[in-house]
Length: 329
Image 1 (cartoon, rainbow, N blue to C red):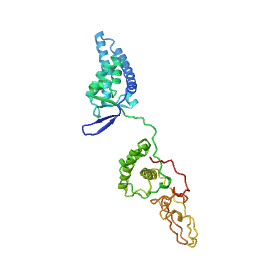
Image 2: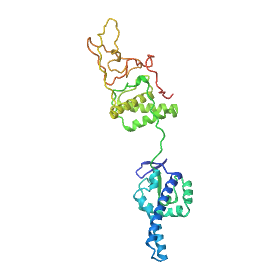
Image 3: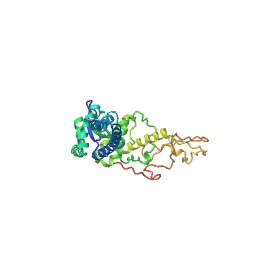
């Protein structure tokens, strides 16, 4: 990627097109131009049968300049050529802005010399020598051919948080967290295993501090900054899925529960969820809040508490197996 700083102190990340893509686009453009030139030449030859040789030669030169020079200039001034459109390329100025007629005219005039007369050899040599893949027409016109369609690899999924942190931050207000911070957190989580342990730990603590300042809730005691970030990002993704795809689960119909006897000191299956239905979400792992139900009353679950009561934190030993999340050392 070529970084360019504009006059407004804005850094532009431009991806210059290299020789293979430019050669393919030029081949498509030349095929179209020569086909158009052949059609125009045949039509003018039929129409100029009664003219002398000098007039026919003048018409031939005019048609050559009109089709092979004027055509590309007009097309690049107004839009993109067929070859560049097919290859996802675009001609821009050195400062990243759109080209004007003068830029297209210089590129077209130089194209006759370095592409048509030398069969593209001069343009290939200039493009190979240039650090940004520019030919002589680009150098004289002050332009650059960039790629608009960038081939990206398979997106890396954000590692899931520990099981006992899933849903622990359902009450957080995430509206104050800006998109830039979310992007930074996501980039860190997908690349944290590629970072130096000390550097990764410092970045995670800084990002966690920014999230705490925006949400007003600190991480549970004993939770690493990376696990805290993963849990908050997981909560945001769950909310986005509910809002966009309407996948909010319907609450199950309550079932009658026998009155709880206080003599045995035990808790019923509904009481194991606790008052907030989150298994001690913001407390230490493995703890839960217990709320006794009144005799004859059906205990109510908190909205969104879809987890079963057998999910115990890492200190409890039972429940689901730990996920593949492994924060950096």
